[in-house]
Amino acid sequence: MTNSASPKAGAVKKIAYLYKYLDPDGGYHYTDEPKGNYRLISKTKVEVHYDKEETKTASTFHKFSGTPVFPSYNFDYTAGKSKFNDLIADAAARYQLDEKLLHAVIQTESAYNAGAVSPAGAVGLMQLMPGTAERYGVADRKDPVQNIHGGAHYLRDLLDMFSPNIDLAIAAYNAGENAVLKYNYTIPPYSETQNYVRQVLARYNH
Image (cartoon, rainbow, N blue to C red; front, side, top):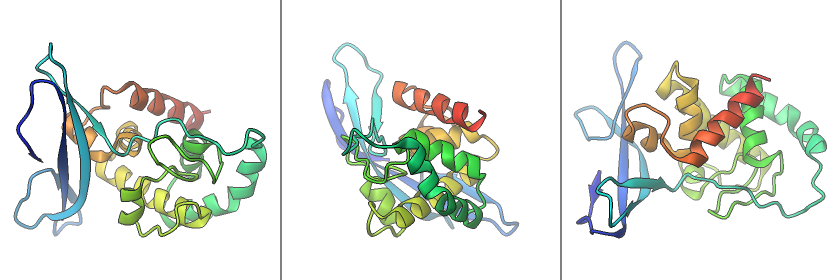
């Protein structure tokens, strides 16, 4: 991870890198440091906040979606779910996801509202940030087909990365994979992420 000099207080922007390597046996390996045959697959913007009274720092990754802002107060959750059932089933089959898990993520992210926009700039059913959309070839984040397929592809990659721990994959969908790596393969100590994981798992296991 590269960064500028750390101030005593305030915030500094960093870039966190993630590299992937596919070994001859078909196994994936990940690291945040450049190594031999590893390929750069992610570059995540990070803002680290420094407290005057604490030497420990906390990072806020750009993937945080926050609470979606819905354009209509009359949005019908049930109708939204029914409307996208077939599309979600198609994406789940394509990326070998449990359809119920994909529903749980979408319900938590946007309540099936394709027009949902968060204060942080996440858009659509799966609340894609610009960097994630670009990474997965999503040209129009408001398009339900592109949005669901882009988000499902990202979720599939996270499940592969953190297998067999589904909790970490869900946490990474909210906070970014680099946040999970930063905290040594644990759910990051961010209240938003911890609540997010609980909500998704509750809906998934319901």
